[in-house]
Length: 219
Image (cartoon, rainbow, N blue to C red; front, side):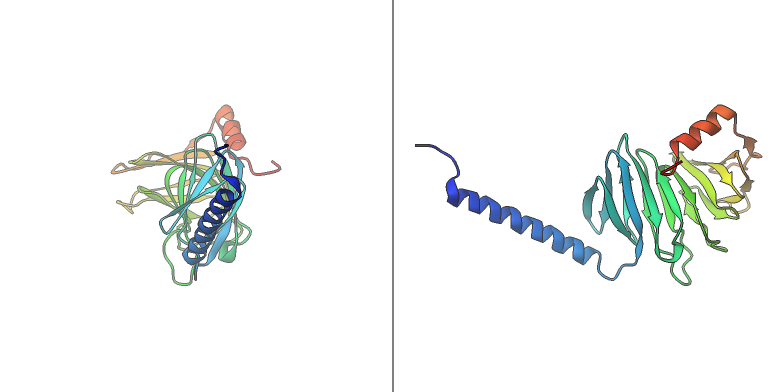
C-alpha cells in the first residue's frame, strides 16, 4: 500500500496553507491601518525587505510603502521608490545592502522623510521642503536647495554626499555649526566631531560611475 497523503491529507495541507495565507493578509491589513501612504517600492534587481510593525515582508517586484516602514535591500539588489502623498513626483534609488526608513511629511512634522541607516540612496524631488531636512543619517542632515543628490553611509561616524543638480546643505547632527554646501558634481563629507572640509570636484570616472549606479529607469 502506498504512503501518499491521499485526498484527505491533501485537503488538510491545503486548509493549513490557506489559513496561514489568510492570517498573513490579516496581519498586513492591521499593520497598515490608519497609516499614510508614502510611495511605491519597485525592485528592479534582487530582493528587498519591508519591515512593518514587527513583520518582515519580502519584496521582489512592487510594494506600497506606508509611513514608518523600513526598507532593506539585500546584496546585489537595486530598487526604486516613487514618492506619493505630499511628496508626489519625487523618486529615489536604493543600491544594495541599504537600510532606509520612510516617513510621510505631515503638517508640523520636523523629522526627515528619509532616514538612511546604512548604504546609499539617490533622491530627486519636485517640491521644496523649506526648513525640514529631506534626508537624515546618524551624523548629518540634508536640507535641499536643489533637487537631486546622493547620500552614502559607509561607516557610523561619517556621511558622504554628491550633488547631482542644484545645491544641498549638509549639517552635522551633533554640531549644527558644522555645515557644508555642495553643488553640482561636488563631493563632501560630514565626519562626527570634525569641521567639514570644502567640497571637491568629482573626477570624470567617479562621476560617470555614480550616475550609472544610481540611474533611474530609462536613463
